[in-house]
Length: 598
Image (cartoon, rainbow, N blue to C red; front, side, top):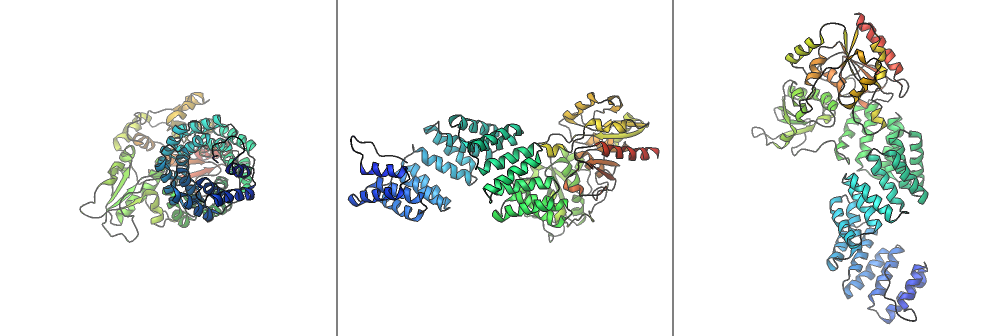
């Protein structure tokens, strides 16, 4: 609240009224402001502070009327800035933006207007514009902690996490008691894979402001990333006690319930979030995963369409019309690969089905996957860069994201269409790897790590290489590594490393993916693998494959079954106890022993 210039001797009536205002004696302050206006109806200062007080007390419409009287007397930047704040109280974002913009036009050196407009733009999802305004504000007041904090929030939304981290840290350095800076920095730290540091920031925010629901919510996120799920749920419960309408807390609590296999609880919390914010894609996506895991694929795949509206969308929509069931025969169809390598392999099975319906099908894939996927029958495989190609032969084109295909085709767990094998390895490569392997022994390809993962839940698919020891002890068995990436370093420390053969498949990191791996797989008697792209490749090639799954596996493997409707040649071996693989590999070794006998 700006004060008028001090005068010598006795305070002016305006200064007396402002003092009462600051002390919270609002009724007396208002009487003082009104008395000034009675003496001088054109006193803009009195009109401004009457409007401030009215807006503070929730009388926004009355405050706007008073502001207009002041503006009619002569435009001032502070009047339009306050008008913008009043419009914010009425959820009139566009009017607020216009008012902040008018304040800046009147006074281009007015930092409050830049900061207010930037904060609103950030909340509206216009983070890049917000960033420019924050930069203007900070040029005028470089040590404003709130601007640094809000600017860092905009950077977070733009996924410029290192810069956001520095911004929150700067805000904290300027104002160590600024609780929101701590819990917002915690969100960035979780996204950067540093949950322990995030937890410390949340705890500090809670020490500063125990009733801050957002700090408890972010604390739950940090604990979830660390795998401390019971504690995470307690923090999220506390957040919802403090703010029963906090949609982020509902979604995060639902995500944990989903990871624990408590699907009814997950769906209930996702629905609470959707009741508050029907457009919240993250909640619809979570609902989809819960339904898919339970086998309700009709509902699940319909909700799964929300994946492209999320903060990190699964794909970028193409410019063509979407494919529908009534699309004309012979109409060109573009299928767009999305998400992970295993997803592309698994759902590529549907491309030939559209071709069988009479469509001219083009599958758009990353360059690294084009060679493998080109073995699909009856379709053309092109690069993602070809997505903007014009219509084929003058015909309009339709498109479909690849992982929307099962929903479009009404796929259910008891009817997954498509033949296996639907991919093929190159004959010359098969011959070359066959010669390398030779004919001796029962040859098992092994893969134990899914690669880079953000948190404990994704890492639970990984299997310690030591767990494969029961296979190494079987007579006549040869273990052939199909592992890629940093996880191959585990071989050097394995007690049975002498029994692991390491072929140099796909040695060039820029080469087409999976071509040598596919050819090697065709020469193996069995593949034993964790849940990654390898079981999908083996299943698509119709090779015998044992897939070892964590206690709570991905939705595509369903629940409580040891077979897969996707791949007839696959057997599933599930953990009976979370994070314990001994029983899984004891069962796998027994099954391998029976196979090896024959």
